[in-house]
Structures are given as structure tokens and as C-alpha cells.
Length: 127
Image (cartoon, rainbow, N blue to C red; front, side):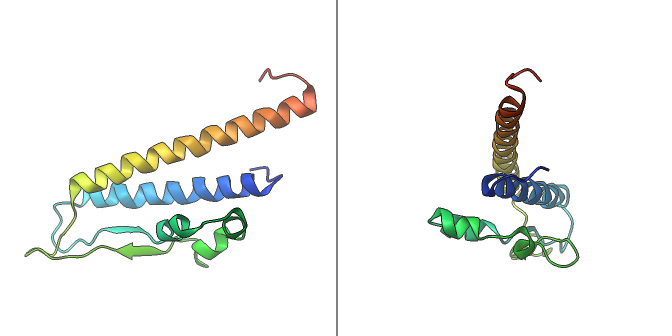
């Protein structure tokens, strides 16, 4: 993706992380009945919620959230049932829907930013 400003860089990181989170949430839902399966989620949500100013958020690097193998830091959920599986299917579906909505918003923002760039270059908003 073309990175011509910090916003675009953050949007790219958001799309990458939302995609990886969707994979985890889908896996959680698919394994809701698997004994001893522990749900996983990304550990970056708390960081983003605690970012209070643009400078703190713009200093985040995707590499800080993704380890050397290209995997996102995962946080395992509790396992407090007899079969060791504590996946709450409804909660996971809710998280998945929210994640997809946020992915869509980020994607639409990228589309509009690219449209503005195209307009600046060509003087036309036609695709």
C-alpha cells in the first residue's frame, strides 16, 4: 500500500491487525465445542483504547505489535469449564461483527484517501 502519511500507515496496520484478529475469532467460534480449546484474541486492543493523543498513536509501529515471525501477539482466554473450553460463542460472534465493521471503516477510509490522491494527480475523480 502507498504510504504517503502517518494516517495511511496507521490504516495499513489496522487492516493487517483486523485481518489477523478475524482469523483468531473465526477459529474461536469454530472450536467452541472442542475440549480443552482456549480462545485467543489480540493483545493490541488495550493499547489502542489507552492511546489518548495523536502523537502517542502515530508512534506505534506495526512491528511492535507483530513479532519476528509475522504473528500478532495473542492473549489466551480463561478455561473454567469441566472440558477446559470456555469459548463464549455469542461473545466471539459479537467481537467478530465489531471487528468486521471496523475493518470496513478502515478500508473505506483508505479508498477515500486514494480517491483524494487520484484527484490531486489527475484533477478527475473518475476511477
